[in-house]
Image (tube, rainbow, N blue to C red):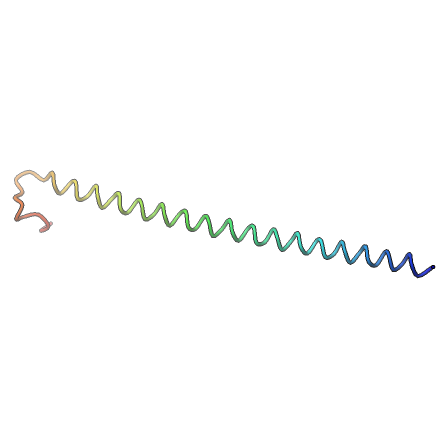
Length: 75
């Protein structure tokens, strides 16, 4: 029976190590997912900003005084 206590202690220690590794792995996956989502959100925002600027520029060229429809697109 003297071997039972050290064996239980080793089992407990191995379980603690395993759980620590699982927690660390979960945290790493969670951090990587957050980074991917942030990059995706920034890409979407950049895309929307470019589209908005293109529209604003197109609207400005529509407002150029003295420009005829034939002259549009020559800027």
